Amino acid sequence: MSYGTGPPLLVVPGVNDPLLPAGSRAWFDGVLSGYCYRQARACAAAGVPRTVWYVSRPAASGAATAAAMADGYRAVLDELGPVDLLGVSMGGFVALELARGDDRVRSVTLALAAARLSRHGRESLETWDAWARGGQWAKVYRAGLAAVTSGWWSRLTAPAIRPFERLRDHPTEAFRRSLAVATRFDAMPWLSELSVPSLVVGAPPTRSSRRRRLRPPQTRSGVGTNGSTAGDTTC
Image 1 (cartoon, rainbow, N blue to C red):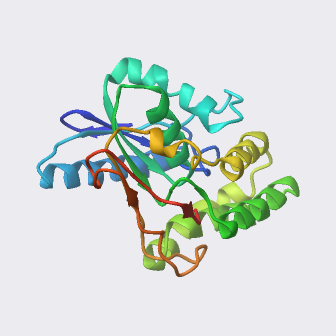
Image 2: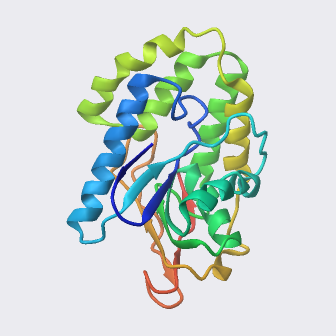
């Protein structure tokens, strides 16, 4: 899934990726194409044109750590060459691990992510795990939607997830593994070792997050020069 021209910007999706990976549903691929289009247009308008790629994690990989998930993206870098990374939610954790171990990463942007989950974030994912374990998939899909949408967009997209709530075969193992990876991840012990330019961005509060801001970035040589770090994230 890609759109645009210029050097590649690789989007690494979050904890909900096993629920609706790229290529699984035609209508959702349309949503992802629109996302790549908007990101590519924004890059071009800022004077830094990029080809935006959205690549889901291999569902059958069995990766049980963010580092192992990052390894799954090395083949993508073999195809694309040096990339800028945009890690969304848990995808930010995977992006950090990829930047830590692969010099083909030119920069990292963490969207709704940071170095680890906050207590509120861990509690939220533990609740999602209990729902998935108990087969309460309607709650899982609705919570996932609430985590990334708000207002009119949430109301508009809510009907689209109803068919998935009634599916008999849900990606239980892959989804619970994704939750476990996010819950255990903590980059604070090694975050200062990263040398690539990095940026942490947030978003307006949604129904699944508390009304508070990310901690201010801690910088060594200034944001966008030798990297920035932030503490906890609720996503």
